[in-house]
Length: 357
Image (cartoon, rainbow, N blue to C red; front, side, top):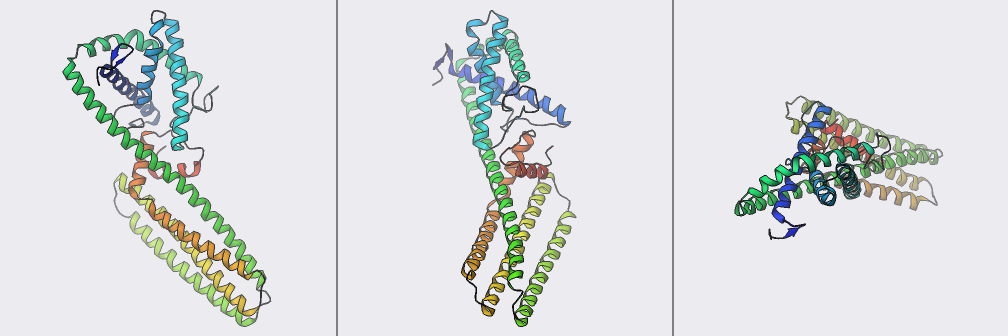
């Protein structure tokens, strides 16, 4: 396998260079972002000290500059163009796959959809000259001096480690995507149901203005019972919230505590919506006793459908596990500048919980 030739170079040497330049890219990015964030940031998509975009970019530069290595200007131009094209299509692919931009140049002038910009391209050109003229030649000599047997073993071990790391990181990114999708959908669904129930309550009040005093009294008692249950559940929720806040927690525990608090808040919202739906259903039954209504069938069907929607939202709430949230937190801490155009509010909520700025 390692005897496969790529442009006249053994595969294991290509893998060494890929891993080496991925590591050097990780050093550069981690230091740069850490200085900007005033704290250490283990930058990158993967857990380990590797940034595959830089490794892939380095390989592209080495390949496209082979015919022009004696001309420093062409090395700059060819390296800049090749790496910029790679960065553009990598950015598009990652956003379509994960619904997240892991880098965003939209705040810089003359950017192209935020994936590339002149400043980044110029940096790629400068890196191309530095790599081709200064860095690569001595590294190439050192790697070529490694005995074949040792090189085979190292290449195999490093490839397996990188593959395992990439698989784990990919799964974390998919977990974050699922959470973003579900959070955004859940918030929209709850908001729609709250608005519809508000309208339904007002509509029901208007329809019952002419109801008998006995029916109105029964409705009043039902409404008071619902209100009491809502107040009791809110007080219990506040007590649990205060008790949880009093505990000393690690950063991970604090993050999960915030997630649990938001779960309770959404669960409380759903409980309140459910109570309101049940109250309206009771009201609809009382209305049927008092008077005939042409739309009573549709009215009750809509409320029954809303009750089913609330039940589904509660089930989805339980499907988002702590592990999913921890994986999302790890991705965000390694990529604090990540943004999501499609799920902006959900991304901001996740960043706030993970204390990513």
